[in-house]
Amino acid sequence: MSSYRQDLPPAGGFEAVKYKRNLPLRGPGALVILGGVTALCTFGFYRVGLGNIERRELKREQTWARIHLVPLLIAEGDRAAYQDGQRTAAAESLIMKDVKGWKLGQSPYNTPGFRAPDRAL
Image (cartoon, rainbow, N blue to C red; front, side):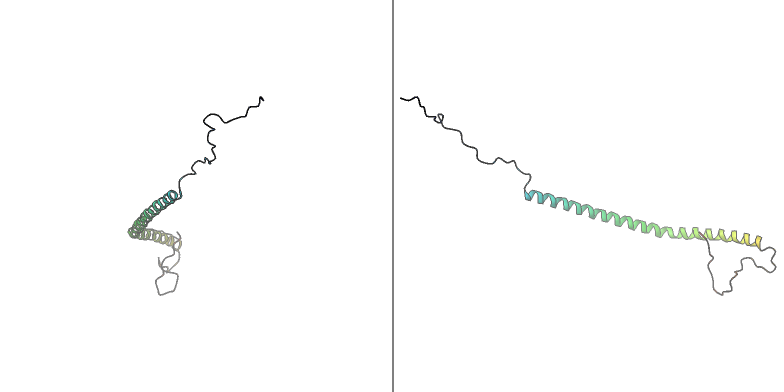
């Protein structure tokens, strides 16, 4: 006989061929992402609302502070105008001391109405 020997499978057979793709998970699913985005947007809108309330309160507080400061600022302006008028009268009396018939504080304009004094700030 011949020395030819046929190659046979091992006893118990070959192991199964792995033909399935073995891919890892690609991250969270679409519903998880949608839920996360929804939660994040909800939190963001909540914080924007809180910021709007805070900004509105600060604006109200600033408005009332300005309202309450108006009398003080008017009084300061009146005080500064009075002191400026006193300095102007002193300078006018010094400059016009040699002019006969000059009245101190008389307006050089011939207008019947009141004219507010001009002041440089």
